[in-house]
Length: 164
Image (cartoon, rainbow, N blue to C red; front, side):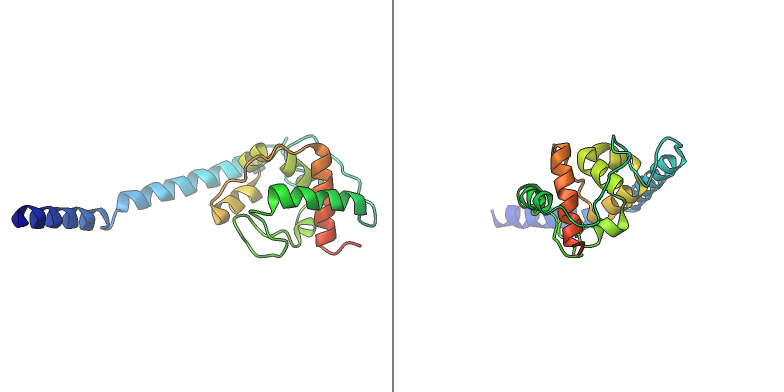
C-alpha cells in the first residue's frame, strides 16, 4: 500500500513539474493576442466615423456650466455609491478599475457620457479603453445607466476633480 501511495505521489509531482516548465507556445499565443489587440486599436483609429475625443454613442455635445450642478452631483454620488464604488476609487489609485481623480481633465464630457452609457462599444472601438483594459485586466460591465444617471455621474466627477 505504501508503494502505491509513493508511486502516486512521484507521478503527481512529475506531472506538476512538467506543467510548470517553460511553455514557449503559451508565450507565443500571448504575443499573438497582444498583436491582435494592437491591430484592433489601429482599426479603431483608422475608422473615420469614430471620433476618439467623443467616443462611440449618441452624445455629440455636452454643455457644462462654469460651476458644478450640486443637485446633479449629489445624484451622481448616489449612483457612484451603488454602481461604481466597488471598483473605482475617487483618488488616482487603481482598485479594480482606474481611479477617478482627474478623469474630467483627461477626457471630454462627450467621451465620458458615451462611455458610461455605451460601455461595450467604447471598449471595442476606443484605443484608450483597450489600453486601460490591458492594465486593469477586467472589462467594465455595462451598468445599464440612464442618460440622467450618466449626466449626474459626470457632475459628480467634476466635483471630485475640484470644479466648484
